[in-house]
Image 1 (spheres, rainbow, N blue to C red):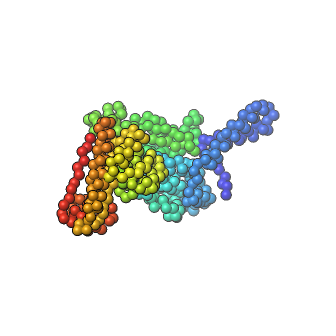
Image 2: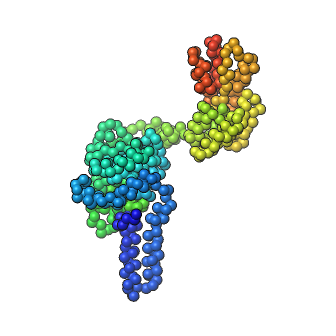
Image 3: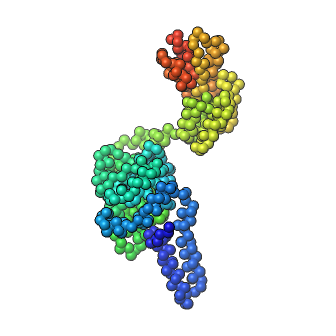
Length: 481
């Protein structure tokens, strides 16, 4: 069902004006054909933009589509007449498909987990952002009108992402004060409420640290029908947003860019805490503790971008977990396993996450395999920064039943193999001047575990079960370079 649209964004206003100009030109013989041609081309360009963006933007979810249809087909004038809302709400207030997907993309890009929305309307923007949040993420929406919470909640309940949304009704500033009192902080704040209070909301957020250190503030309608920059603007909302935009532009605490998406979205982030202006405002110790080593935050310094790692026994269990963890942190990963099929399966998983990885079949109890493993990695990536020696076997036999063959197999992998991996990788690390060696083992090598058989069956780790029964254990402390 098509719904009549009124000009609400700068592009829509331009299209409306060009349409009227084209109509006038068509009825006036004095207008040169060349001018009519230019008018038509300008109208084609302007009128086709929004439709093209709609077509090329990832399709919205079925629940967002349902919410949009419910919003634009609702009789908001009648709702206001019946006294169900305090204000007359135009359906054009809805966020919409392209902007909703843009907000969802920003959530993904910023890795936000907690979002604050000031001004929800029917919840299209809230649900769009919720879809981008991780499963344990949350979005707190401030909405003045209780009717709008009732309107949106049935669709929130249908969506698997609706559980992430908490709607708080009443004046937004009251909710903000509650959040500050609770010590809450947010990775993203989206403001789309009463325009005259934008500055007040912004200052309260910044002055009370509601925004996390790396957080982003998104402000909707910052171009407001082009009235923020037209010299003859008299519209109160346009003037309020003009003042807000200038205030942000002059605020040394942040930097911003206004994106001309629909009616404009401002993206605002804190500048570095070590900026000259901020340092001049307070008596602080300006050192690496304050700035971060090399100007990088602790979480950023824990990244493994550019590093090369290998994981033995990486085809399953704990080794598979190590491979994913190292890859997610930014490292290139060699997945080493006796079973090539298992190693390849993990590499495929990592590829889907955008991680560079290779499978290597190797039996670490054999010195030739260990050296070939190291040579393959160095040949491929030029270095080994992280050696994760995780491979181990467990025969899980009683002490009195353990054969010498089982004993030799266990020690050849768990001790001899680990030593050979440390030695081969260590030579590379010594030459390059850097490296980390991580050797893993079960806690069962350090403690008496009366249910060790069941425990090791679940763990499938490579300490020697039969030695535990006699109370003997060993511990390997790897040399670190």
